[in-house]
Length: 536
Image (cartoon, rainbow, N blue to C red; front, side, top):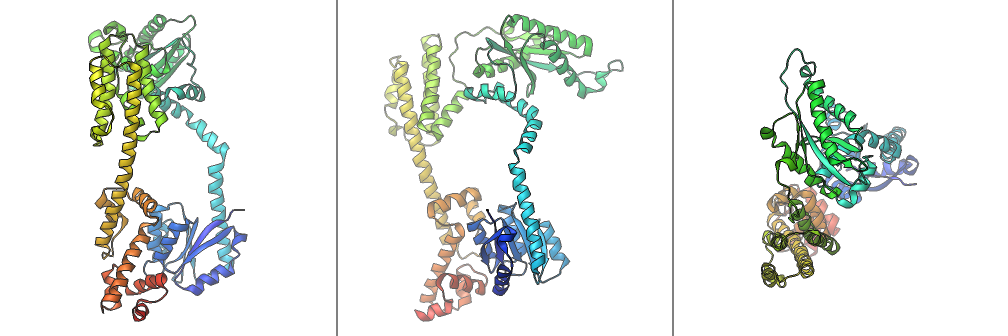
């Protein structure tokens, strides 16, 4: 069986050994993976060993138990903490409760009592794990959350945030029956604010109006066919499947009838904007946006009716245009790769050129848009255009219409992959520069006893969590271990080159307490600073 990992912290070695020896840890479901004689030592071991439980005394040198708990609560909020003390002090108990301490135990530690406490802690840990693993409970929570998740998904779908290859599976997952249609039509509903009058029941309950409108729409739309109705940022939104013997014109007429019914039955004014139809789920974003734009004409056309975008705007045929979503996908692929993703995005853009039946100048503008997107990225990351092959030559060929689509596609893929490699190298170089800057800062400020990760990160403009990760990855050491090495190296120099007292050297290398300095020094070199000096 797997045992829960526990660390003991107490400045009395006999107490630690006694507790470790007397308790049948495995029978209680635990394994002691380490012990520490002070809070600072415990903090380092917790970082290295990542235990499930900390058992610590309150009164310890260099860093007491409560301070230790405050520090670990920031990084390990779910760790169980057992705190024990020889001081039956209500103030300590109050602070322990504030720090979410699991148990507060008085010394001397009674074996039977501690065993009962460990059993309770194990049961608590078992229950937490069981809750996380309980698929039935997770499934129940998922089902309860399904309506919300469905609304969020449909919002993402019409905003173009769902990759086309995921749309069908997600629609099936959420039970949205609109797949397999000849085409789809999107509409957005706007319910006008009502003046409160005594004769109108719903006007006195404004919060019920959207619900009533939605219910009325669902009742009428079921007669038409398959659809999804949900709330979006633009208002109540409809995505309808046009298939079988159903027609787009018939749907628009039905939406017009719904506007009339809302006025007659609910006594509310409803305006519905209808967008362009689309033949692919990936184009729902454009359909949705055009429905929103159609609503914008209500001040001209009038409220309380259906406004079809094709009636108020000229139909655009064969547009070939790179929008914000295209730019975002291309930039993301170039920044993060891999090469296969870059090729997929670029070839997807190129395929639209093949499908579009447009004038030559639109092909040119589309290719220039793709090229300019990469050039802006080069400028943003200060990449050297000289490192990108044939940039000027191909740019001129686009303007002169001498560059064919296949050649353009291959060139863009090569250029994008080169940019990805350059950005990866620059990212690695930036990380190394940051670590060098951090080391320099430590070398210049190790004398400061308050030097911390937070101070360094403020200097470097980085988050502590990311800094800790890259520092350990690049140096093979934690920040605390590296700082200790620097301080002890300086201490060794001062012991050999000066006649300063030990407490003076301790202060010079960043230790406020001589005793803690001596403890750390002996832990590293096996002898006290005084004996180390005499041996030189």
